[in-house]
Length: 355
Image 1: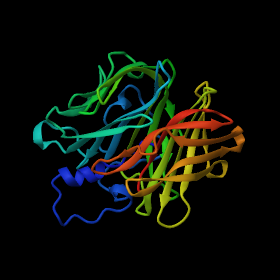
Image 2: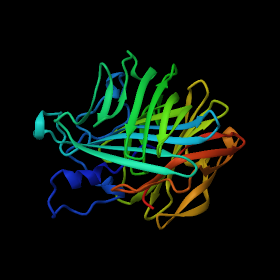
Image 3: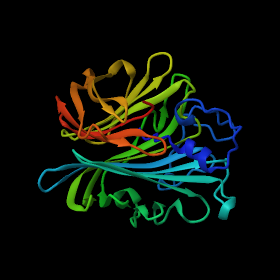
Image 4: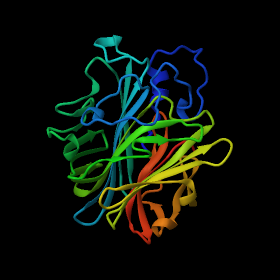
């Protein structure tokens, strides 16, 4: 889903909170109340390109890209790039250390045998990280997601580098973006927690990828998620399982399952037709079942799943390209590419948090 969450823990680690700070509720504190921040309510009218930028007044925000790639020999890879914005106070950006924003970056590459992940941290107001429009650029240190195009989502450059990997990708799309949920209002619980959420699932990526000193020329589909909120979870929600699926038929599917301490998970998603038309998927329409687990970082992770959406005649199974795609970062989680087999073959990405 691209709640990619860790931002609130970073807030505590880097934001100068004292030792008397209350224990956080929900996964990574995302169920903590945020009464001083702007609430997410239905009926918002999105505006582009302005909504590609940062949103003052909201506590949590991210720019998130995943790509399923192959080289000329058919070797498979996955790439992730994420920039998180976490506001300490509901204020506009300020110059210097008076700024009340924490920035966090995650980048990863995955093959069938290797998974590398890295993170970056920055305080706002000093130029180390941020998002600007005209021309669009989201960055932290030398990690960049940038465009010179009038429509930023039509033509972008994506890059990141760490000691064990690097990538430089060109992302293009002529397709319109997708508003998730109810016209961009994406509900996360029966109690009404929600985010504003849009995606660009129609990117095509090409470029170069380096892993452990070996270079590859790669291409394949990519997916951008954009979300912002102030309290996207309840205190009872412990984590989620999020799926972004590129089907060979040209259709796309986004699903997320929000797990809870008590009661059934909250389950919803979006069916994206090949022409870009969307349909919200309700719990009653989705059968999402873990099929097998792998021991990863001392945890039992469900790396194989079955998904059935009878209304769409979809009956598929998913398995991880690399079951050990563990993001061994300050707040750890699982994220990696998956194969799709069955009625609608394809490829995609899976994120699992809170295990």
